[in-house]
Amino acid sequence: MSAAPRLLVVDDEADFAAFVRELAVRCGFDVSIAGDGEVARRLFREFRPDVIVLDIVMPKADGIEFIGWLGEEGVNVRLIVVTDFNPNYGDLAQKLAAASGFASVKVLTKPVRVATLVTALQDGVA
Image (tube, rainbow, N blue to C red; front, side, top):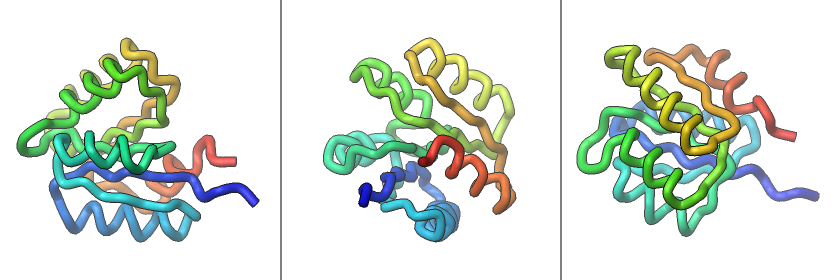
């Protein structure tokens, strides 16, 4: 029996993070949540996620800074970027992640449909 895939949700909107957790648990994930990029760094090291759902606009360290940090750390996880602001944020995040060596980056715009999020979570899960 293989271990459940791990998902780290990084979003300062508690309701959205809880929504993602609920769907991910139904999809078989073990889930941890961080409310900003600073907390996410610590949780990343402790939790070692396989997938990250990442908001771009957050207090303290934002999603762009977090992607940069992951790239500096040489991390290559599946990344699902979510944003409800200017779509250029998603484009910027995708370009930065690709330049940092991430193999899989999806960009979703809030509000995210349940089916879209489930598909993004399950993509690449054995």
